Length: 237
Image (cartoon, rainbow, N blue to C red; front, side, top):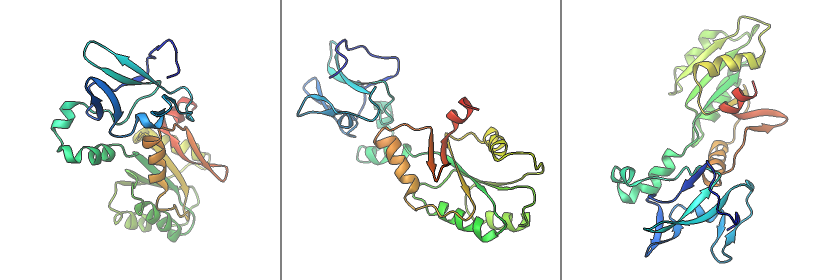
C-alpha cells in the first residue's frame, strides 16, 4: 500500500493492541472507528489519495498476528484494553469521541458596545463544543465600563477573564501573547465583538481534525486569523 520498502517512520500509529482493531483469525480486517477507511480502499487494495499525502497504511505482521500501521501520523482514536476495561463496551465509541473534542479558548476584542460582546459570547455558548475559557479584551480608550462586562461574564457559566490593556503601544498580538502565556490551550480563537459564530463552527473544525485527520496551523476568514494552533503560534513568534 505505497511505501514499497515498508519503512515505518518515527511518527506512526500501530493498530496492534487497539481495542477498535477488528480481526478475522489473526489478520486485521478493519478499524471499528473507520480510521483505516479514511486512507485505504479495501476493494482496490490501495491507499486513497489523501490531502495529507505523506500518510499511508502499511500491513505489518509478527509471530502473533497481522495488523495495520498508519504511517506519518498519530491516530487520536487508539485505545488499549486498560482503557476499555474502564468504560462499558457499548459506550466505547461514544466515549472516545467525547475525549476527541477540540480544546480551545476564545479571545474577544471588545468594541464600544456591550451588546456586541454579549452577541459574540452568546454565539460561543451556543456551540456544541464551547470554549474552555473566554477572555474579553478592552483596549485603551474602550468606553464600556469594566464592571458591566464582568457582570455579564459572571453569568456565562465558563471560566473567564477581562483583560484591560493599559498601554496603547501594545498590539493585539502582544495581548494575545499575554493571554496564551497564562492559559496555553491547544487552540485559540479570535473574534471582534459583534461577530456571530455559526452554531456548528467548532464542531465542523473538530470533525476535520479528529475524523478526517486534517492538519492546519491557522484558519482564516476575511483575511483575518480566526482559529490558531497555539504550538504554531509559538513556533513562528
